[in-house]
Image 1 (cartoon, rainbow, N blue to C red):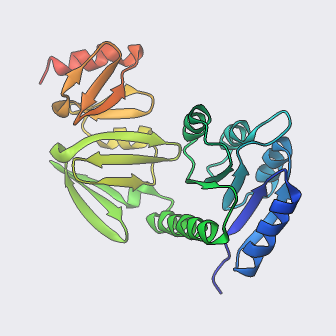
Image 2: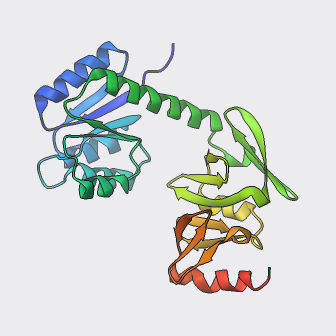
Image 3: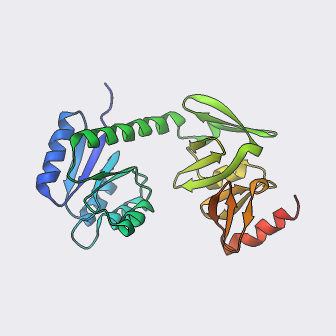
Length: 244
């Protein structure tokens, strides 16, 4: 029997929350609970972790939805889908910093919500297939690296990698043609790559220095991607650039 995706609903309108819970249960999801306050959602996520969180972005009380997600993310990596009636650009940008899976607008249609949760479930399955041990799924051989992606070992030439970006317990490996999500931290990934070519420029970024197009005071650019450059890493970057 296939395991059901477990969903926590965080919504302070109990009519909306109850309707979502009823519809999700009918379509095969397991609702771990309904919370109306951010503080309670944080505790719930800690004691009974769901697979995905539906989060009202405009929660009333001491913690709004975004602040609640930030607190949850300190302890767990749980996909978040924001529910929102707020189209304010500043709120959207603040929410985007928490790396949500998606935004679902109010009034909610079950078609949109079901499609979004189906995509989240698919992503969760893909991460399980990648496996818990990155050592078994990443191998370096001379001028190339092999990574497991969608059940296959994919060969990438080191010279084709532009940069890597941290995403909590995962990292994104970016080439000029494709982006791969790896089940390893940026720190662990950096150890596997040749330090003569791949250099940390920010806590969230490792770059291929042979691909740098622009070196600014507080940023670098690769293929039109602006990447922050921290002062603490700048001297190390300059030292490596002098050797190539």
